[in-house]
Length: 219
Image 1 (cartoon, rainbow, N blue to C red):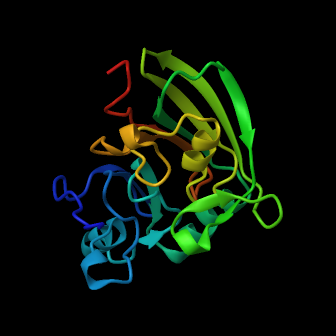
Image 2: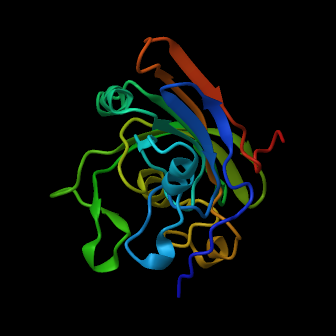
């Protein structure tokens, strides 16, 4: 049975902030937005709004995923940033550690996804009703039991990276939804949003931020 127990420290990790936008480091285990149940109200959105009441969600990370996330501090900025995501102008890079040895040095996974309704919140590949989903990957390190990869999502479907890696035959370590039994024994999902680039919603200036994963082989 799932028990929501989000990390309490640090309460907020701010990477960048100005009058219109804030970039944060979301810890693994914290919801981006509140859930419906009373015990699921603690979230990154609520924590930021306790300090900055005008803060608004622009995009989300899975609860189990850590890393960089953008929030707007006014409605206009939310609309401008949301449009950048919708038009795929925002560039993102994730780092993950996969179960097993991935033979390919790089490649692309293009598999349409939809919700697996009887098993929500799981997603599934569906060629008939799924939405287009495209992920590029690059292998960066390998050992006897795992592979470290960089992931570049071209689309932004729910659980896209997790399902696409599972479909490659190498689930992300720590994935309790899509991983093998060995994967599920890990304390957290080894998936981290480590780099993001976008244009400032007011000035149009190019912004980019990088936050290395704790599990990266170079750390």
